Length: 146
Image 1 (cartoon, helix red, strand yellow):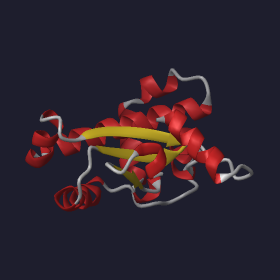
Image 2: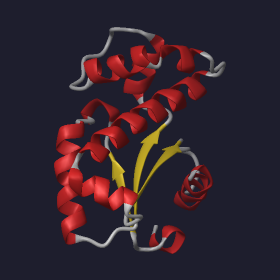
Image 3: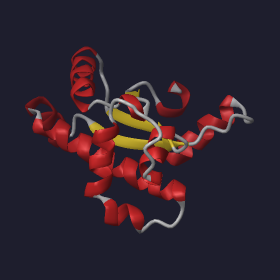
């Protein structure tokens, strides 16, 4: 990964069912105090079963952040429904999630200074792991997604 992205990046990957902004915020603050990151990249797989559950408006699964993702979905329903492809709807929900996280982070003084002081850049990356393909192929796919 360092060959592709350099060593001043930190990829924060959380399974959607475990996304908890309050916990992530504390972890990110600790990382920023101990590390030297220029970019914080939030990544998620388009095939994430929990995001798909929310988009499908099913209630089959129970997971810790179901209510949080449902809230984001309802809040951005019109924008998400404009997308025609299912994967695009997942991507739109993820974008809305990233905006929510960015807003949460920007409310914290440390992040406010970092973000607006151009010390830290926040990005999101959608991936779609192809199980039948090589690791190199999937890294290239992730690079293109970024």
